[in-house]
Structure formats: C-alpha cells, structure tokens
Length: 148
Image 1: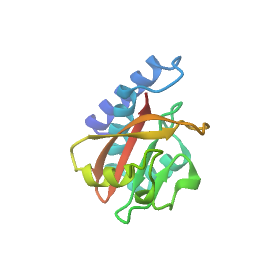
Image 2: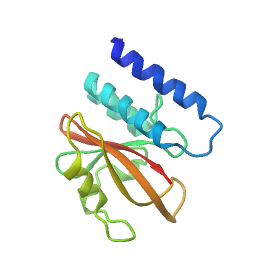
Image 3: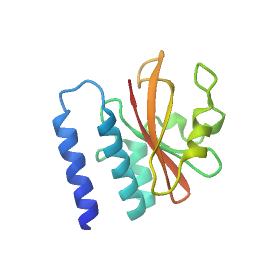
C-alpha cells in the first residue's frame, strides 16, 4: 500500500473508531470517507465501485455512504442498490432543487465542493437538511453527505 493511501486509511479508521458510539455521521467523517473513495477509485475503479455498491470495507457507516454519478448523469454507485442506473440529474428535493445536477456542475478534479439540499436519512421518508461533499474523480462525480 502506498504511503498516501495508508495515511488515508489510518485517518479514516481513527475517525470511524472515535465516533462509533454516535448515532449519525459528522461532516469530518463524510470528508474522510470521500478521501477514501478518491484514493481507492484512483487505485482500482472497478473494485471500489463494487465496494461502494455493497457498503463493504468502510463504505457505509451509519447514515454515511458514498455515491457516484457517471458522465451521462446516471447513478453508478450507491449504497441503496435501487438508485443505481437512475437519472440522478433529474432528481429534485422537496423544494425543487436539482441537487445532483448542481453536483455535476460544481465538481472539479482535486477540489471538494459542498452541495446542500433536503433528502431523507437511510430508512426514513421525511427529508432533512443534507450537505454532500463532492469531487470529480476521473469520469465520475462522487460524494459523501452528512445530515444536519
């Protein structure tokens, strides 16, 4: 394992362990998970996409999970398998905000941007405030969001 990837893995493990008792994920934990996604996608895209779909190896933690959107605007990776293949850029929150389209517009390689919108926590139906950190990794726009 390369030193950078090892450092990311250790930081993620420490963050996850420190918050193991918390009910919901935090902003810092969402950022750490996105760094893990970025490092692993660059190393092995196919395997990482599968891990994200399965929620394996640290790619699902309470209400934190990564997602990716391909260049066609369709969801390519998500912890909720039923979302894979949907046209994410057509989604709107309860206020009519096209949040996935905004993600596609603001995501840049090597830069993390924030997108705020209303979205239900996993297992719930009522939308709440969510902030997703998004970045472009190759041909994918990937993100991890936390709920406020």
